[in-house]
Length: 260
Image 1 (cartoon, helix red, strand yellow):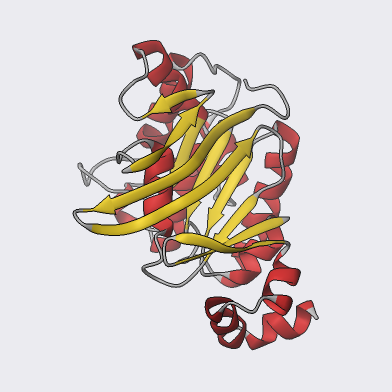
Image 2 (image 1 turned 45 degrees about the horizontal axis):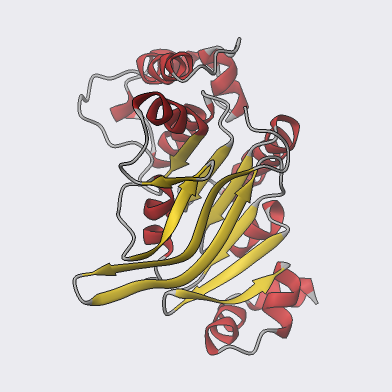
């Protein structure tokens, strides 16, 4: 496990291009063990998912670098470090779970994640039942085929899967969009408590300003591939003058009014 305050995952002057089209440019971001969750907000197409994928090491930066415990990603980690990375840095996407076998059950899916934890040297007494309980699903769901779950249930199971290794970093890309708003608030409350208790550093990429406000002390506004405003959501949303911040404020008048 990472030491409190240690930089686990970071991007420095990160740039990503697809062909000749720049998507990210000059992005700096550090995720420290035990630090408060960080949010990234911005319009569709701003590069939020690309940022997550760069931090996961699945795409290669065009400039700058991404580092894991000071070592560059992707592709330059030794095998033992790759297992460590897989256990230490977990992600949940808006899609929840991509199925290869429609017969796969929740029990098998989460048991596989607990095996990943052991391979990464992150053995702990967590059970499938406790993982389900954390995301507000009862134990009877363990026997369900994932293909039979609703969108919101899949997202909760995906979150449970990510938490199975008790990661140092959790990367959330629109992770709870299909969940009922009332239940979403409860899952967010539990996530915030668990992150604090276990020292998990959380990055939340979302259009949901209420979710970002509930979890994150600091937010970054991503526009045109770079951060154009940073700080507490209240200050960013109310005082920001960048056109994208103004658009976000106008698109969420109730949230903006409540934060005044």
